[in-house]
Each structure stands twice: as structure tokens, then as C-alpha cells.
Length: 150
Image (cartoon, rainbow, N blue to C red; front, side, top):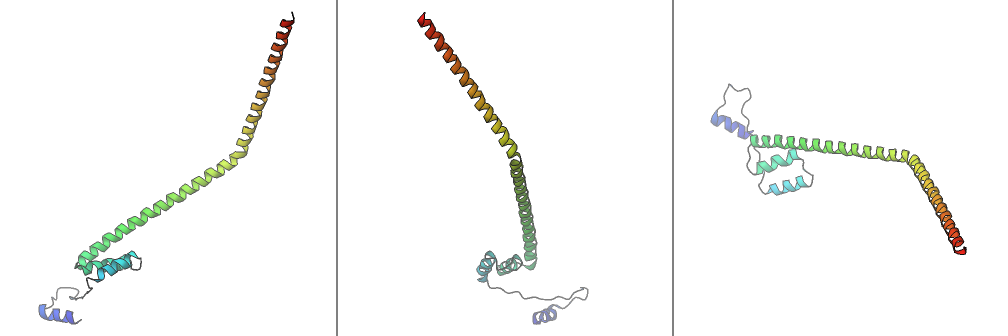
């Protein structure tokens, strides 16, 4: 308040402005920048607190700080939107995987039954081939031994 009154006394006040000039004193020691960064990295200080404090400590103007805050908030919103989209895609992928597993379980009895039938058919075919081969072998052996007798 004292700074504002001194400013008005020295420079005068224009009557044309809607709001009278108001001085604000923002102080932050430069050594505190590391502490602010550490607090932000640890998640104890939000971006809205850490960014202005750090920029002010290095001498940024209010307009520069406001512009940096706006840019940081837009980037944060983009990042959140991307993360939300990734989570939605992950959820959808999990649901599709679950549906595939359920479909596989539903078709498993029919598949097992058809595989069982195929295996039974293979066994019967093998038996038939074995029987045929044995019969041919016996026939050949009988014919061969009969030829030796003559």
C-alpha cells in the first residue's frame, strides 16, 4: 500500500483509467529456486505454484509468467488427454481379449469333439491298414510256402 501511494505521489494518477495503478511487490530469493523445483518434482507443489515462483526468482515479468503458465497448462491438458486416450484404448484391448477368450471357451467343446472324432477315424484307418497289411503278408507267406512245396 505504501509503494502504491508513493508511486501515485511521484508519477501522478491519470483520471482516464478505470482502475488506479496498484503496485505489487513480489519477492523470492534466487536460492529458493532449487527448493521450488524439488518440491514440484516431489509432487508437493503444484504447477500453478512452482512455475510462477521459479520464474519470478529468475526475474521474469508478470506477463512472461502468465504466458508461461498458459502454455504449461495447455501442455498439461494435452498430456492428460493423451493419457486418457491411452487408458481408453487399453481398456478396449482388454475387453477384446476377454471376448476372444470367452469365444475360445465356447467353441472348445465342439473343437475337442471334432478332434476326438478325427483321432478315432485315424485309429480306425490305422487298424484297417494294419489288418490289410497283415492279410497281404499272410497271403504272400502262404503263397510263398506253397510254391516251395511244389
